[in-house]
Length: 496
Image (tube, rainbow, N blue to C red; front, side):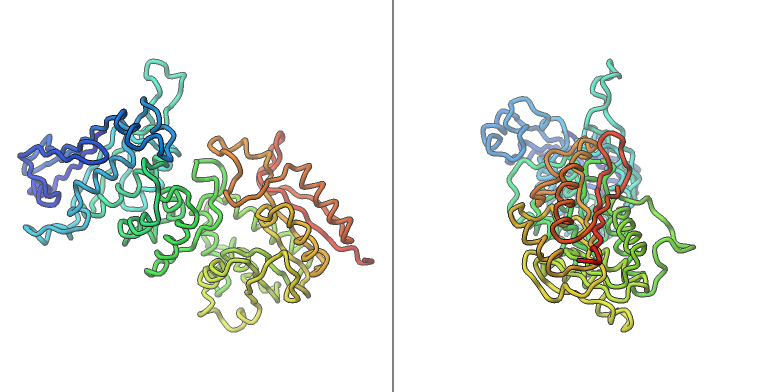
C-alpha cells in the first residue's frame, strides 16, 4: 500500500526536514505492521514528494495475530491488507513519522508551525460509506477532496463499484495536522482495526485529535468508529474532548447513518440540538424566517412529530422520560406554550451533558423556572413523575429488558398516569432499507418491534390502564415495510 505527500512550497525539499527523512536516501523500518519504506520519487526546489510504501506479509499477519483479530478478514490468508490503506498504514505512519506528527523539528524549529500547500494521495482506500463519507470527514478540516470509487472490474462495469476509493487531498495545512488527520481517519474510513482496542486508544485519539476533532461535525462518528464501536470508550473520549473546551455533546445513540444509509447522522443530531438549545436561550426557534435550514434527519423528524402531537393535544406540562442529552427538552423550552418541562434519565452523565447543552448556568431565569432535570428509573415509582399533562418516551422502551417492561408500564401508565403518553420506537421491518446494518440499530437495544408487535403491546397496555391509543408513522412510510419509526399516542379515558 502506498501513501504520497507532496508540497510545492519553495524550497520544497524542506519537506525532508519536517519528516526527518533525507530526500536522497531510501530508508526501511521494520515493525509489527510489516516493512515500511520511505523514499522520494521527486525532490526539487519547486516540488517535492515523499512516499511511504508499506509491505505486509498476509501469511505472517494471520499467524501472528490474524486468528485472534477483531477483523475477520485477517484470519484469511487472502485479504486486502497488503494492498489497501488501513489501520496498518496508520500505525506505520505513526511510527515512521512520529516526530513530524508531534510538530517538532530541531534543525528548523520554525517549520512545523508553518502551513504548507500539501497534496496527499492514496490509490486504494477502503471506505465504508463511499466517496461521500470521505468528503464529509476531510472537507471540514480544510481539505479539497477528490474521492473516486474504484470499480470491481473495469472490464465488467455492470459489476458496479467496490468499497475502495482513490483519494486525493489538497490543502494548505501544517504537516503535523495532516499526518494526524490521516492517522485517525484511515481506520475510521476502513471501519476496522487489525488489533484489539484497549482503553489506551482513547488517549491516542485525544492526542491525535487535539485542535480539530472536538469541533468536527462528524466527531461522534469518528470517535465511535476509531474505538471500534466500544461505546464506553467512545463516551469517555467525547467527554474528555468536551473537558478540553470543545462544544462536544456525547452521541449516546449512534445513528445508522454511519453506513451511508438514509438514517440520521451525528452531524444532524448535533446541529438540531444546538438549534434547540439556542432557541431555549432566546435565539430564533427552528423554522423561523431567516434561519438556515439543513436537510432533516430522522431524529429531527421524530422530534418534530412528537412536538406536533403535544401541541395538537394541548399539553402545557410535559415530562421527557429518558431525555438523554436533552434535545427534546431544549425544543420544548424553545416554545413558551410549554409552561412546565421535566427531563428524567437513568444516566447521570447524560443529564450532565444535557445541562451543558442547555447552557443551564446561563439560562434566563424565566426559562430556568420552567425546567426540572432529575435522575430516575422508569422501573420504579417516583412521585416526581406525577402532575404532567403528557409524558414522552422517545426511543426508550426498546432499551428496557422485556421482563422489566411490566414495571415500566405500571410506573408510566399506572402510577404517573398523565392525560397523554407519546411513545416512539424503531420499526424493525424498516431495517432492511439500511444495506450495511446487521442486527439491531443500537447495541443497547434489547429488542425492536414489528408494526404488529408494537400495536399488540400498545393495545394491551391501553386496555389494562384505561387509555386509548392511535398510531402514526414517523419518516417516509414505505409501502412495503412501513416507516422507520412508529409512534403510539395514548390518551387516558376521562372516566377511568
